Image (cartoon, rainbow, N blue to C red; front, side, top):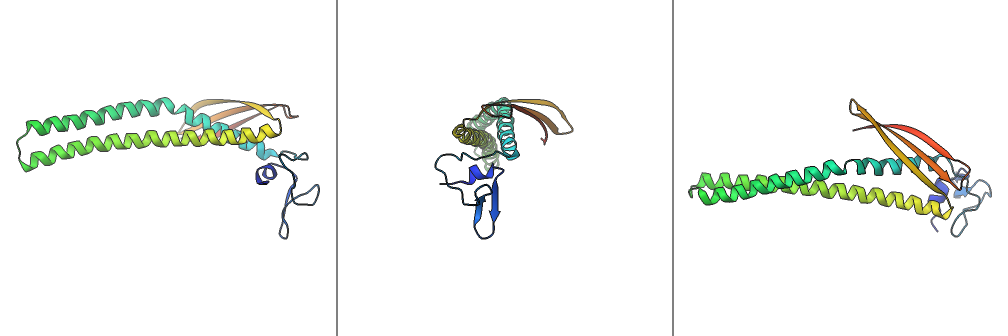
Amino acid sequence: MNYSKHCDLCKNKQMELKNGLICSLTNKKPDFKIYCTKIDFSKDLQQILESVNIELEVIKKDKISIYLSFYLFSTIGTFIIFGGISLLKSTENSRYAIEIVFLVISLGISIFTITYHNIKKYRRKLHNAKFDKYEIDSFLKKYRIEYTSKTSFNDKVHGTQQIDIEINFFNKTKKSTRSSYNIDC
């Protein structure tokens, strides 16, 4: 079994040069099937939860602007392509006119391609952030820990976005945490 996720979040982990990762309570290598009954979550759990939830919310916040720019620039690219095609039909067959038309069509294709790659990159980032959140949530489910998170974005000041996050835990002794982060945009 891969104990790294469990032990990385536990206060009782200890690294030894000879034995590697051991539990400081038992002085033995970790040995459990589904979850550790002696786990004592460290502050790393809170930081990981905050990081995963903030990353997902930051990506979701950009959704409208990403999709608007996708539709706008793909429309512009399409008009440029069709404009170049109609220009090709109406021009003489001179070499320079054909070269200019192909440059115009290439510009339209480039705009369309860049726009497509931007939306694809956004979707990949969103998928990865959702997967990371799912992974940590399913890990916590093994320990019957549930939580809710509330993220709020404050005004940007000189390219720095202040983000406040509040995490409320259920089925755990810690009830809630509140943190603030500054992220360069």
